[in-house]
Image (cartoon, rainbow, N blue to C red):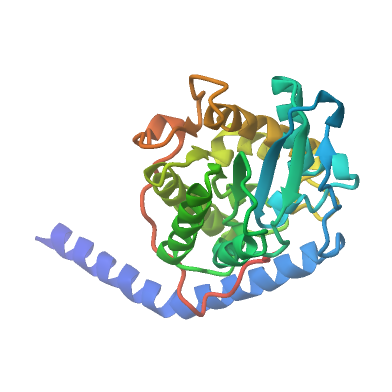
Length: 299
């Protein structure tokens, strides 16, 4: 009995301690978010290089590639237009298919998933891309947008693009654990929430007829292991090499979506398939931070 009593007393003490430190934990997260925002800043500005053009025009038989989403889809961090994610994908497609690829970028730096509808609204009414690539989610996590709301906007965007006749590929939310300027424990929380959002995005994408790529698993380890090479000067957005590797990670699903490749490799899902835990698409649900826990760096 004394042993049982001591366990009960210890558990009660822990519970009291947690309740007393909850406010302190929220204040810590708020301060860390402020530190991260100051450390990252906006040295790259808010405009990505303009890369919209027909790449490899001499090949002829032109096809259309559309980029939607946030600063990664827009290419912020690349110093030359040919190094943006859209241009890298367009050039990769052109070389694989020996066809000219016309790139259109509707992605906007700083966008959350709620902006996808406006990005589609900005397109000409009769514009029908062969394939649309969506990369979104990081800003949803740092601004604490509920996963259900983020995914609902993504589902609607996929539906609208499919209704236009486009194939759709979703690059799921990157794992924020690679963002070194974000201190602990905020980085760990951001990592778990970004993986949770990525898993939900993958499920929604394949259910809606789109292809999904787990960027956290296909290219994420490179950003963790080689941050000096993979990140640009702000240590938050990809560098030219980072975009090259990300485009290479997305390309197999783009080719599969276009019917030019039969099998999806590790980290890729085809429409109506079931997420495979071994491929990095299933993450245990985690509680989202409280509304007053402080914002992440954003961008």
